[in-house]
Image: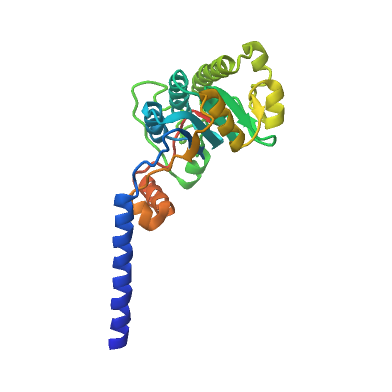
Length: 291
């Protein structure tokens, strides 16, 4: 028994030491280490559901005189409409004072393309999946299932369309028409952004803007990207555009909380999902620029 207690004490001490070291690294390892002449590489990865992080980083990079140009490494199928539009607008503001070059990764489609067309130059790999110009909103209808199990949902509302796409009522033609009109409007905004950013006639753009995807090589022929190349090529282009051949590229590291440092980002995702379920947010109806 004493031996067991001793082992537990040692393990506890090791764990506390680990926490202490992690805490020190968290306190003293969060500073910016930009070179005096730098090309910032900011990664946009995964589905874009929130723009706050990207906007904050872009604004800091815009103000920092050490940063001569920005390379956005886009590896995203897009995401929610408004965050994509916000990132797009911020890139437009930045490129007035310093070059912004996009390097497309495996996927830079729909919203990933939307934010890219604001850049000064766009590079894509020959096999990058891009395109998917369009808007989508999806929801599920549980009316038949609810009827079978005897569930009846009572909705009190101020207007006939206040519960648009309510999953517990029959699909309403009027609801669908309203949502389709909304989607058409947001789709036209997507077309305008691509047309302006890539200098493509909007009538010609409509011919390929039916949601289809393209390889990077095909996108080059269509005028959606400027060059075929990798991240290194994009960085070299950024140096030329900024006229700083001796600039050094550096990656913008995403700052994480102490909790994430100790328990990893995956643990945070699990707790976030549990919170969503507890709050009853089982379904979310969003307009998406998403492939």
